[in-house]
Length: 135
Image 1: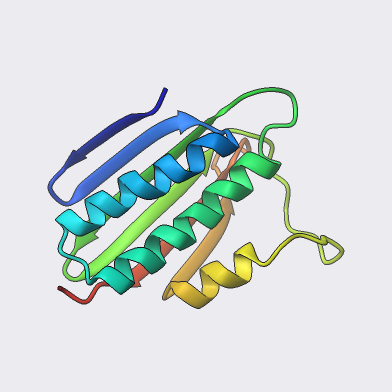
Image 2 (image 1 turned 180 degrees about the horizontal axis):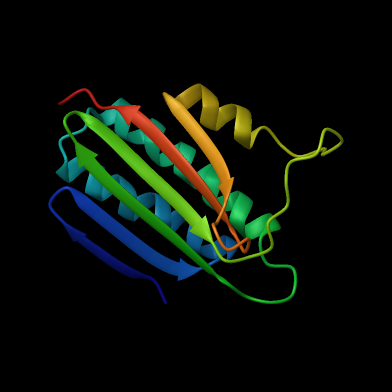
């Protein structure tokens, strides 16, 4: 079951890292972005980039069973920062990976994309940043 928290400029959603939750993540974040008065096209692009990051969690993070996906966002001074995080197995990108175009899409939609291992070595953190034009 997904749990959403948002108060004004902050948003948090915790859910199981399962494919059937991806649409819910996108919808909830989109609703929050609407509440932040993001221009509709910008909000849709941010939600799509986050969807791609969350899809990578579903596909790659938890090989030994179910896990959790966390999406946190903050709006500040015309900029939105979204962090997608898991506690799964960190796997550095390989030059031989034959994955989809999710990373390229994230880079194309956002101003800044940063992918790091969580400090304790378990999990991955994707930080996405984008200037938001007010509607």
